[in-house]
Image (cartoon, rainbow, N blue to C red; front, side, top):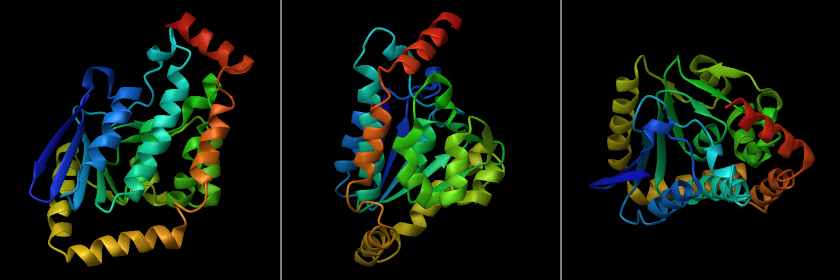
Length: 244
């Protein structure tokens, strides 16, 4: 469900479910975590999609027949974002198209996010009784408290321009092709820098912003998990199944 390509000190990880708009499964998240952890020789990791959509969030079809699917998806997402942030490699995301719910959360774990003005971002999962709380710690660091609250309490989408203004996206390019190309250009620039200084700087930035301090990611995960299997969540998911 992912493709991994190494070129010198750059590892490229491509989300490879374009027929499902790169929707996340527990296996995909496990593979993503493994690919990041095993990038021992990589100083930069580029995460990009195959197809026009970066990631449409969870593949909820997994949850239809398996009661354990949703907890596994939430847990996998939490540890994927934490693994990106903890990696000594600089993680660059190219998100030329939509990054929805869990897809948006993945971007928050990255160090640098490149997108396009037409891309879409947001957390519509409240509509089906799932709390996006698992994303809160890193989204708050990206956008600040007020903007992150507004986004997580809303089910509306914002475009790339708004995401750039709010801090979720760091660079905007005019086309998907330019977005992908810029991510790799930036990777080339980053690996030209002194490796010890670069990784030490990332580690210190994590220390300053407290992104990995304490148990915030675990507590956020537990908040999202606490709604799984509840009456509201079951009813809303059942309604979703009836409408599809």
